[in-house]
Length: 82
Image 1 (tube, rainbow, N blue to C red):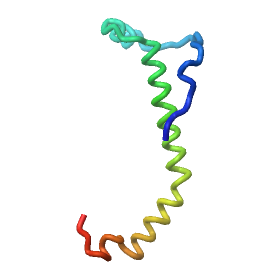
Image 2: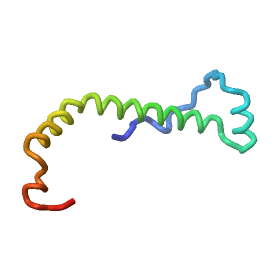
Image 3: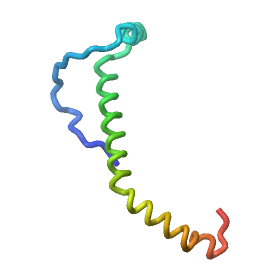
């Protein structure tokens, strides 16, 4: 799964509120607040995408697990030790 977005899209000004102590600490470390915010949004969206994929795939996972419970692993049948 790869988050798809236009990384060259124009920047948009937004108003944010953040913990003042965190802002001061990031600035003290010469951190780029805009870059940190963008990375946080990317992480958030990637996590959401993963959660959605897991939910959409839940029935397949359950079906596969039932099959393993009923029939065992293929590697067990051929004597392959993993």
